[in-house]
Image (cartoon, rainbow, N blue to C red; front, side, top):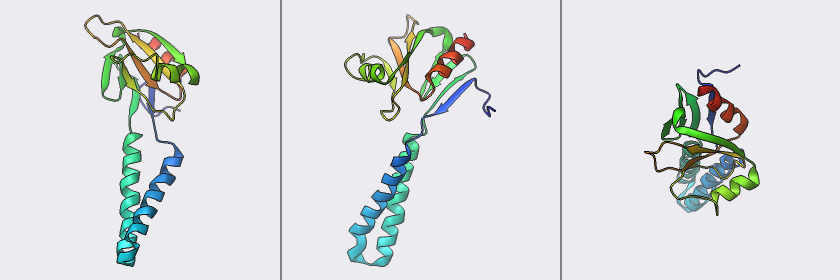
Length: 150
């Protein structure tokens, strides 16, 4: 059952290990503040954990959606009519397009902790962006939604 009205919507959430790291940041701050007493130590634990968790959450708050004939990826909104061929990139090919095959003019919404991606050509002659690189856990569904929106 899909709760969204969009044919495709994905939130690129941070991996679970980042939440453990957030707690460890709080523990580190608590240890730094330990010489100042129990209350500063507890405050450091709470504040450090909260700040690190907010940072992890905001980094994972980016969404990819196909809605109303447009692809919305992070801050980019591109009409589907301005997009060309889309291809699924496996982990190895995605790494190549993030590194030595990358074009500096490309729009890249990448999350290194997501191994697969989709590369979508931009066919609009007015747009200098050659392609969109989008990290996604469901590349096949994203391509299906793009094709359905055309």
